[in-house]
Image (cartoon, rainbow, N blue to C red):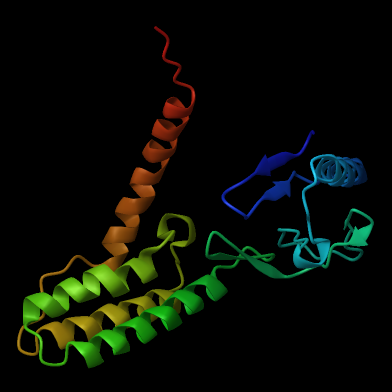
Length: 202
């Protein structure tokens, strides 16, 4: 297997960098090997539920057709992996819009339930139930467009007003929290690699 495979729970991905047609052929061969392995190990794979995505900003005249176990894998312009929306044009607009939509839904629910709650309870509810939604995976998709940043900030501003009608709570800004998340992400990845290569013997 020459291509890279990543497996998390029931969401496996197989990918490789494509520059020439030879790379496409190698990826198809790896897909064929994957299909053969599934048959040998009595594993069921539904190719129709899989998606083929090419990540590039360039215009692709003839997109490649990949198949798995004799079935054509449908091409898509976006997909969700580990609850993060990945777009073929490398844009994070869909991910931001999805996060904002879910966060508003969670915030409105919280506001209905805790309408008569005190400020501390409302703040805790926001930080526990709403803010994690708009920060999930943010080290990966932290937006740079002003409109997307403002859309995320509006959720927190509404929550701040709900938590304390007279004074705005002294919360960290979402921008600063995402920046800190980006800074810490490489260190976490290095630590994970170190743990994965640790062997203990008696």
